[in-house]
Image 1 (cartoon, rainbow, N blue to C red):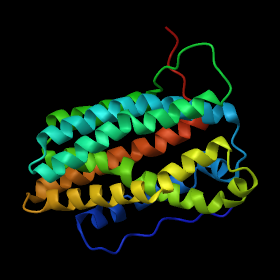
Image 2 (image 1 turned 30 degrees about the horizontal axis):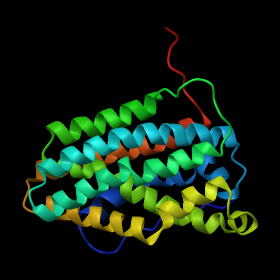
Image 3 (image 1 turned 90 degrees about the vertical axis):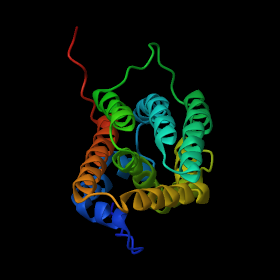
Image 4 (image 1 turned 120 degrees about the vertical axis):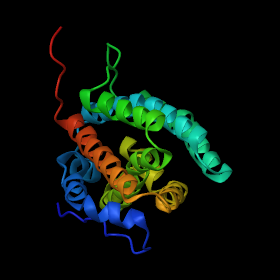
Length: 235
C-alpha cells in the first residue's frame, strides 16, 4: 500500500515550525503497519479492540490535561475552547468508544494502561499542571493535529472498505476524525498555539518545540504498540 504523507501547512505561524521540525516522526507515523492495515480493513478486530480500549483510557487522562489547560488559559476564548474540548473527549468521543467496543470481540479482564498510554497521559497532565501555558498547549496540540491528518489520509485509503461495508467498525472511527468538526477543532488548536508563541522568549519557544516533539513521539508509540504490544514486566 502506498503512503501519502501529510503536507506541511502553508499558513505561516509558529506551528508550521513545529510541523516541519517533527517531519521524520510524522513520516514514521504514516508508515506504521497499524495505520496501513486500519486503512485497508485488514487489521484484526482484536488489535482494533486493544487500540480502542487504550484510546478510551487515554481520553480520560487527556480530558484532565485539557481541563487544566483551560484553567490556565490567558483569555476567555482560549479557556472556552480547551474546556469544550475536554468535555468532548470525556463525553462524545468516549461514547463513540463504548459503541465500538459493543460490537467488537469481548474480553474477560479489564484493560490496563499500556506503557505508552500511561506515559503519554502522565506527560500531558504534568505539562498542563506545571509548565507555562504556551508549553502545555504545544504538548496538547499533536493529539488534535496528527489525528486530523491521519483521519483525512485514512478516509481516502479506506474508501473501498467503507463503500463495501458502511457499518464496519473502522468506518465510525475514521469518519469521526475526518469530520469537518474535528478538522476545525484541530485548526483552532493550532491557532491558539500560534497565539501562545507570540511574545514569549526564544527559550520558551524552544520548550514548546520540545513539548510538541515529545507528544508526537508518544503518538507514534501509542499507535505502534496496539499492533506490537510491549507488556509490562511481570509482578
